[in-house]
Image: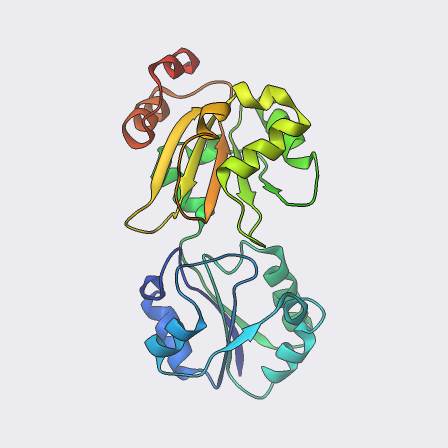
Length: 251
């Protein structure tokens, strides 16, 4: 018996891998969680796609109630469907450790996540990213501190935006500027609906991005390092309509 985490990918039910489909088809019990990330599809879409019953997990099910799921996997093949890649969220890593300690076999089927997708969408180099952070509805200066810490080592900052309810780029920048108005003048990249055919990517100073209409969520925000590789700049011009003045950051 196996507890298998299956990544659903970025946007819709068809983003799942063939390995993921095989795991779902063989499973005795299927769960799905949409707390750690969002997609365009919901549990109804997934049930139609797989033609199998799917049970929704809440945050408490994943945290306080995880032992129940692990115990279930002692007797049956259990799959947990997760938007993006299943191991990006630390909650899922904790369940993996719990299962292994209890002698339950664990399988992980990876998929694309926003962490990897931002490089393709923007042309920014993966090795140039520093620590990431979340801009939440609960007031916190942590994301601001992360931006400046990363800039001190010339690294980009990937910011996840709160999903409960979904936060827009305009709202996120507004909250950051309230904490430190220096943020408004920094260059950033806004990304909306990554993985969809209608993805939007835009680069400019944060204050200008705040006024740009990115459309529907989910949104993601990147604050740029102090300097750019020349290829990063060229990609941002083509992929994100970056302003010509950003060329001054190329080193």
